[in-house]
Image (cartoon, rainbow, N blue to C red; front, side, top):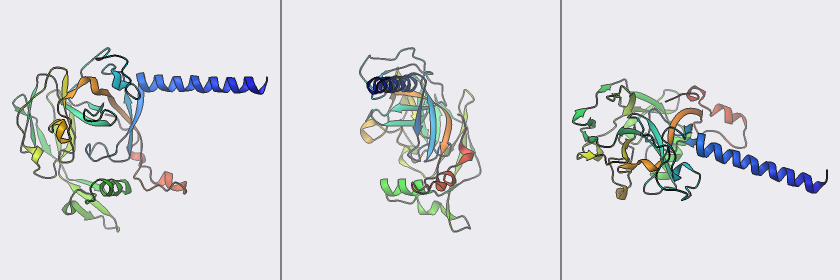
Length: 272
């Protein structure tokens, strides 16, 4: 075999491999990492997820780079209330966001004193023990880069862990939707999004919220104000499936052993 034919075969292999990767990412699963605090306590900065692409069908946003190949959604299915979904942000479709579906088309949703009302009925919320969350390197980096505030959001949420480090103490609750889906949420302060008007979810849209209610720009906030507003279902990319890796951000690129000590093994394999 000549060098020319070997090169041609190798290039052909790379093209086939690239096509396989594109097909898998477009139709089956794709990775997603958590860059913010909006889905605490279920998701932490540094978590890596696999997102299944098929549960809600496919739109242009299901594909890498969102090419305008077709309009609408093929094999469309609505999410269920409580699903954790990844979507192309309406204000900037090049950004992928993650939130929890709370309302479906036709639902009436309002938040009063931090309690979600769905079609006029309060979503049951039970107080749990406070969440004690260790302050990690990636939490510090995120808050310094974005806001320069405490990694715990406010200094009064910070405590010593007794070992020279810090932890965040947050008020934690368990919400249970009418379909039985149950999950934990954080309610830190009496913020502006704790009391809203009544939202009516339009046809072809869903209403999404972050589990960390005071650190999430979601459907309670209009797109022009930095939020999501009513999320068009065509923007859905997929459904969170499983955590496949998690790091606290302390790894040093030139110190290979820190790649392992930074890993949060107990978070790997958690489903939704």
